[in-house]
Amino acid sequence: MTKRYGETVANDDVSFAVETGEIFGYLGPNGAGKTTTIRLLLGLIKPTSGTAEVLGADIRDRRALTEVKADIGYLPDTLGFDDRLTGNEALDHFARMRGDERREELLELFHPPLEKPIETYSSGNRRMLGIVQAFMHDPDLVIMDEPTSGLDPLKQDRLHKFLEEERDAGTTVFFSSHVLSEVQRVCDRVGIIRDGELVALEDIESLLERSGKQVWVHLAEPVDEAEFLTDQMIDVEVVDNSVQFTYTGDYNALLEHLVRYDVQNLDIANPQLDDVFKHYYGEG
Ligand SMILES: Nc1ncnc2c1ncn2[C@@H]1O[C@H](COP(=O)(O)OP(=O)(O)OP(=O)(O)O)[C@@H](O)[C@H]1O
Image 1 (cartoon, protein in one colour):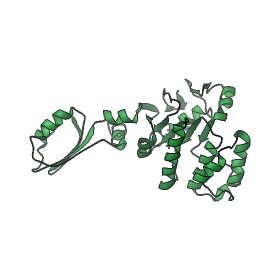
Image 2 (cartoon, rainbow, N blue to C red):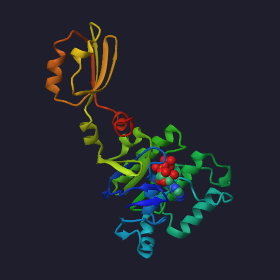
Image 3 (cartoon, helix red, strand yellow):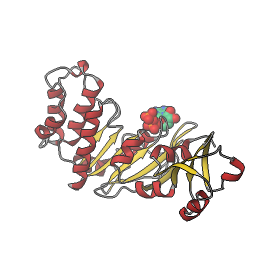
Image 4 (cartoon, rainbow, N blue to C red):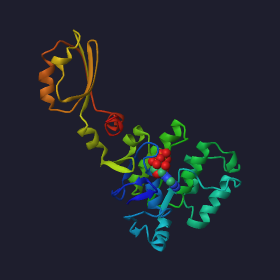
């Protein structure tokens, strides 16, 4: 799909598939184009060119999309509730449109103050009401725009566990985020969007694997950069006797290289998604 706003290409020929029963993370910084994709998928805006299918319905086919929406849950970035309603009244409103067979069960996990008007809610309480609303009709597919924003760490954790349970029960989850650690923790696959373009589309494991190892070495003597560094070491930082780098080459070659030095301390770890992310968003 492509979506233009005048000169701005908010989505530039974005193409991906989300498999049934997976948690797909849609990652990118502010303004990258995540909300645009989500609004396109829900038929709230029209693509400039291209199209997509959601649960078999073409997003340009209003009638087909309306039919499948009974099986879709949607958590928007800003909730379109009438603020004068109480939480209960808002949920009643959505229940009349789509059903609410899981309402009570969800309210045990996420419990906004239902008797109060929404205009008095904190952002976390708004988000919780939105989560209950998105799941209470037991949808097959849930699309969420930054679902954890505004939630405290315990509630975030609760949502992550809940999403994993839903996925295990067969629900398909698509959510956008700019929080790398949450995508790394809960998602099966990730699409990374930058300036409207999809720059990576992979399962988390292979994204991390392809991204090498994070190595930290402390030598007995100051590091002689000219002698020590090889082409397979990238993002190098040298401070006195210590050197830190991302290693992308053959592991045996690294070990053979290191035995030539008096190594006092060594740490080799998988990169965090943050480090991977820097490759896509860092300068150059
Ligand atoms: N209605 C609009 N009119 C003009 N430009 C828009 C409109 N909606 C979005 N844009 C532009 O499209 C680009 C992508 O915006 P979008 O909201 O999709 O990003 P995002 O990744 O969801 O960002 P955030 O994380 O801040 O919500 C931005 O440059 C934004 O300014």
